[in-house]
Image 1 (cartoon, rainbow, N blue to C red):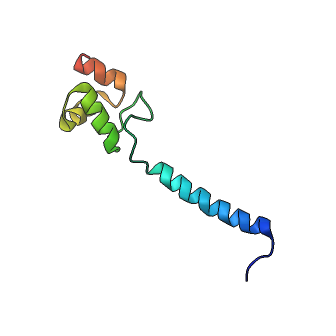
Image 2: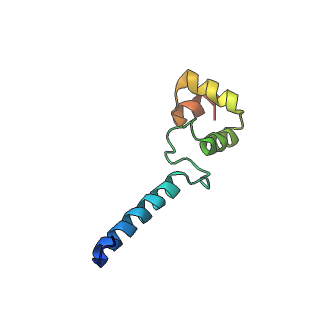
Image 3: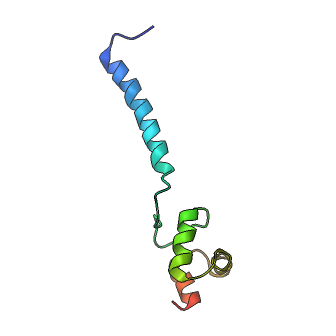
Length: 82
């Protein structure tokens, strides 16, 4: 049955809208720069692309450097001499 309470209907709509909006935001593929500029996240393709372009190295090289010194941007820069 349908509720005659307009607030109840609004709450259901708002909840569905919020869930849809959150899902859209978390999968935003238009991101081109890292969310946390102090760390390199190899699990996000847009971040890997950003950092490989910034440092002028391949994805494999970036992975090897991170294995060696960790995911800190500062440590990676120091290792690469940049």
